Image (cartoon, rainbow over all chains, first blue to last red):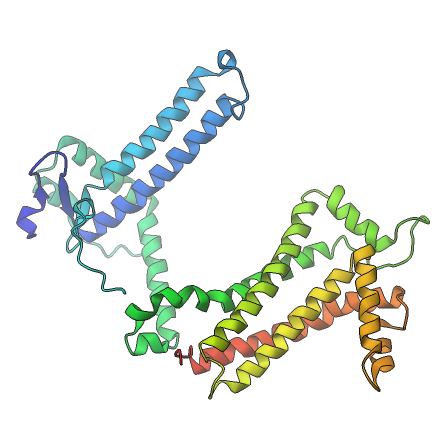
Length: 104
Length: 267
């Protein structure tokens, strides 16, 4: 893939954006960070809202519980969104088209 | 190495030259904004650089040297057992040093029932904050160390890594596995519980069974032919003073020799 074709938008489903290496590192590091903080923090909030899943449904704090679920979804979406970015010479992980590793 | 920003890539200009959707632009702009302020990636790159520079100082293994990694990589977990032993040794040393703040090696009964040693263990297990955790970490790391050292020995034996020119390190390894077992035995006696006491009794009798020098060994190691305060005291000093110094020094030599000779190729 040349630099000219760096946005491959055949279908909206497998959209694939080639970014410079340094930007790719930024995407990887920060999206992973957001995903981890979002999912773990979300579970902490859900845990707290339900007192570790011991409260009856009527006593659950809906705001905190929904905020927790929202945070989990947010982390997952950020992470999923980040998978469309890749850098030069990287195989498309989504298409499973990477070159053979040569191991084994 | 420095944190001077050397990256002159014009991210903004680059982004404008690409057909990005609004969402993608916002996403990338946000991340770049954060990147410029938190600079996590810069620090990670520093670490990466450090990692490679340190690695350059390491001897190449034979699988690297002859490009055998593609055939050999599934044996690698077994090559981690030496590190695994060392790590569990360090964990045991740290947790043991902390336990030492609360343990007292006295075989005397404090109030006519349990001994001081046993009571201090009960204090650690029952009343001390995180004491149960601390002793469990110490005990588990000891168990893991014995297992890892033994498996490490099997790996070295079955890959033929003990062969010339590594005979000396094999002998040192045998000394180390013995020291590990003595560490385990002396530590086992320290709670001065029923298990400890009768394990000590077995030790005395094993020492006495040695021909010619048996009585002398029993005196030296156990401070007599029956268990007493001097037995516990000796086990304690062996466990927290003699063995740590000796074992740490020999481990350093053991690893130093591996460093010098390189990892052995499989025979």
